[in-house]
Every structure is written in C-alpha cells, then in structure tokens.
Length: 263
Image (cartoon, rainbow, N blue to C red):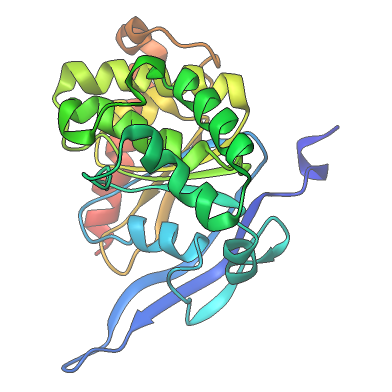
C-alpha cells in the first residue's frame, strides 16, 4: 500500500492554541499541521516553552485547541481520550508510594473494570515487556529512578492502547541509564508496533529513537522542520557514531537555530 493511502493515526491541520491569562494572551501553538502514521515513532524537539508538551496534551484531549482541527484514530481528541485510545507517560513516574509496582500498574485496569484475572495477566505481561517481572511486589521507593520509569511505561501499556504518548520520560535520568532505557524502548516499540509520540530536549535521543523528528520553534510553537529518518528500525547505540546519524543530528540542530532566527 502506498504511504499516501494509509490513514494517519493522529492528524493536525492548522492547529492553534492561545491561553487567555490575566495580563495578556499566551500564544502556545500556531498553524501546526502534522500527520502521524500507524507504527511511527515521532519525536518532538525544541526549546523550553515551545509547545511540545502542549501539543502532546492536545493529542491527549487534556488541552483544547483554539483553532484548526485535530483527530486521533479518526475521532476528536476528547472522544479518543474517553475511548482510552492512548497511554500517557509523564516526565515523573508518578507512582503511588503505598502501592506495589503491580498495584500501580493495576490501577487504570481497576478503574476500567477489568476482572481480577485480566488484571493479573496484563500486569504480568507488561512487567515482562519492561523487564521488571521480579519487581511486581516491590514498592516504588525500593526501585531506582530508571526502574520507576519502566514501571510507569508498563502502566501506560497495561490496557493495550495503540498509541503511546511520552512527555520527556527520561529527562531526569543520568546518561548511562538513559541510553539503556532508549535501547529498551526501541525493543519494546519493535515488539508492540505501537505508534509513539515522544517529547525530548535531547538531539541524540530524538535522532536515535525516531522514524520522524519534528523540530519546533520558540513560542508560539511552530513546526520548522519534519525529518524522516533513513536509519534502520534496528539501531545499536553505536549507530550514533555513523555519518548518517551525525548528518541527521546536524539538520535537527540547524532547524532549531532557524527557529530562533525567525523568532
């Protein structure tokens, strides 16, 4: 099937978002148009305050655009949220300290009314996916920061939504742990074939993970470049030393500079 014939999972057309504040309006997003196809891994990169997270929250139905259109799985973002079309991973793991790791992962399943048997089987499945099978009975404080983020990813995967929205989930971790989790995330993506929208401030992370990199300008957030990655789907960490990787990283950097120059 030709790529043009594939219906996008997420489609934004001329999207605007302005927040009304007490002193002056804040223009968060301006004329954002983007299609994300099934199975894409799309990273959003740009300076702080450029609207990366705001756009992710629009996809999630947590913010309401003030102009343009946005569809998720062919529905409005709010309908997709009610249909539980996505899992959301936040910057902080957000695990409840009084619940075990399994208990934290079960929470959305309990809210959705899954049977106890389904809860247990899904928890076991996603714990294995994120390599935490031996830690379900532990409490969050007994796990490292990287392990807590893996548990947060498992919670987002538990109800098997086709879309995974990730808001800078590894930003607070050291480089060694971050590299390891990047590798694990690519393996998880290959195994599950999810569509992933991922916010990051790291150029190497964006280039390493993505099939498509969306470069955004300072506020009001605009898309200054969309880069389709030529890198293979299977990517060892040392691919970052190749000329192809360095060339893409250079283009991302140039896109960020161009966005600042236009501001």
